[in-house]
Amino acid sequence: MAVTDISVAASGGGNIPCIASFPGEGSATGVVVVPSIFGVNDDMAMVAERLSGQGYAAVVLDPFWRDEDAGVIGHDEEGRARAFARLDRTPFEQAFGDLTDVINDLRSRDECNGKIAVMGFCYGGPFAIEAGAKCGTQAGISYHGSFVQNHLDAVPDVSCPLSFHWGDNDAAAPMEVIEATQKSFSQLDDAEVFLYPGGVEHGYMLPGHGAAFDEAAAEQSWERTFNLLEKV
Image (cartoon, rainbow, N blue to C red; front, top):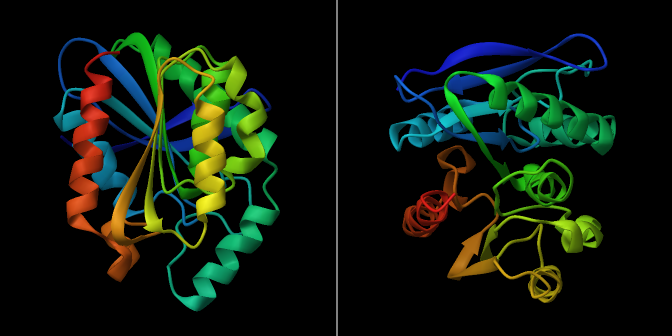
């Protein structure tokens, strides 16, 4: 399915740049994707296409559009420094406000049946928890989520299934973070943590992460994701 540029009005003013891929005629469950700190790059276009190819209305938002260093940033050493600096300048609540606006916009579109899942990669992971607690979403999905431990206090308020995925060699999510997440998720009736063994690294879902990309783990994650989304 084609990926197109769209914009969504931000409640605080301005327009949030996004990409979207819709499956065609009729309405479908929507999936709002929060990217990593590197922005809405080719990996995110691939994600949007894969979702729409499975029949979901996908929108990826850019949470860094207000920043002085907006847009896509590369994965080299300089790019990583720029991306983390941009992250430091972007308040979580500001980005979450943008996510809320995009959720509401997608719910109102003809392409969406009103049901919404939030999917986060790396930096985007915690947004799946917060949206499940505050936005009435139908599912929350995270792959190699970063900073998840800072948002576990919202888990008791989550009212939808959660599906979180990490490799067993994730430098951004050591085992104590994964175990704390598992313990927190045990409060919920439908919340799972999947751990992929064999030295699977941070960024394993995304080809743009180079050697960290693990096709076998990625495909298993996609299979589990679509199994969940089919139930939404």
